Length: 122
Image 1: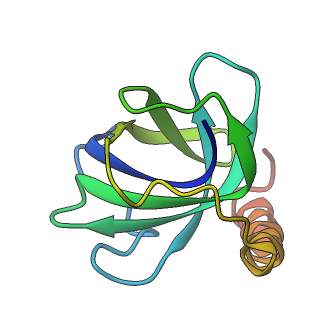
Image 2 (image 1 turned 180 degrees about the vertical axis):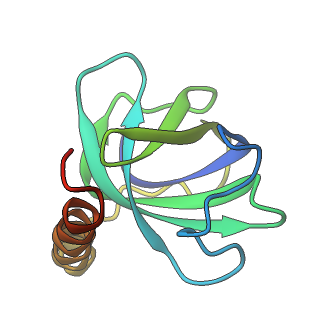
């Protein structure tokens, strides 16, 4: 399946809870997503639901081969935040969203600049 959007369940966070940079029940937040064992990392949005253990992912570009049951890992830069299982949800959609791609690219550049200034290195 070639997808641009999917839902995730059973999200497990490295810190035991979603990072403060991600809004639970709010709007989508920019993240990087890696699925399966492949080398591709996607700019994406993650909108968390419930207690932060479920969410909706919107990829900046389509990815083929995604399927329910596969894991999706969430990153901010090189830091792994956690991951969840792609669900068998009816919201899995092959829709392409160029506006989302532009918005995520701008947010990711801003986030990297802020991180570099605060940390001094990556």
